[in-house]
Length: 67
Image (cartoon, rainbow, N blue to C red; front, side, top):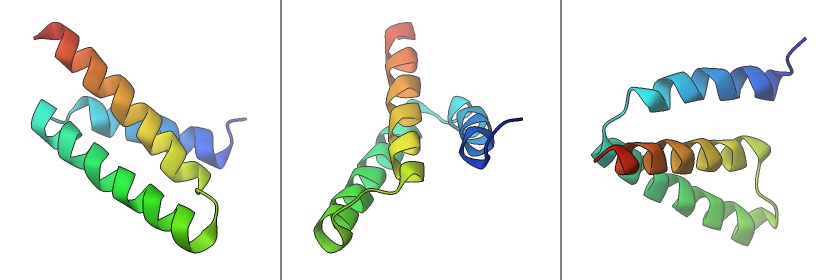
């Protein structure tokens, strides 16, 4: 059985796959800002933000290689 984070990753991958190059870039920048805030205020990054960052980077690289 898939964990909650695995399920979220599957759903987020599907969503990210539908995003444009511009949307992916903006989402990646916004996610990076959230990660920085969590690092500063909490000293740790939530797993879900790390997962989102990984998925966004992978999808961005995939779309850039197609162009």
